[in-house]
Length: 177
Image (cartoon, rainbow, N blue to C red; front, side):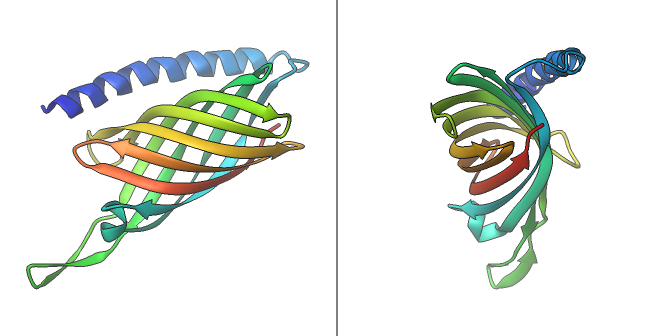
């Protein structure tokens, strides 16, 4: 196993423990309906590959569930979802080859900083578990967003590092309850 695979396996195990703890906390917090500053809700996202990734894959799309905990100007954020990027047909040594779609379950946690009540910057990291195999990737994702009356829209740049690097610009929209 390569060093990146070992790092990704370790990160995935650590992340699953974290997701379990967060899940437990979400269930506990849901029992307290008056908890101010906690929100949970669905989201959808679209992504445009950049760098070498755009040569082999089409635009991606996904959906998932996100949560936020406000702690003043700083907040904690987490999400789990599903992303898919369609594969392109590419020319390799004069032969046309169809690249397989990239499908993954990204799990992210991070911090948000509210510049003003509605506008924030965020920094997330986590693990993307690729479907159909044991491979996973480390995620790093800075972004900026706006949240008004539960509607949350954000733009981000995301890097998935595995044996190769996948980068994309994404737009994510969700509603938090």
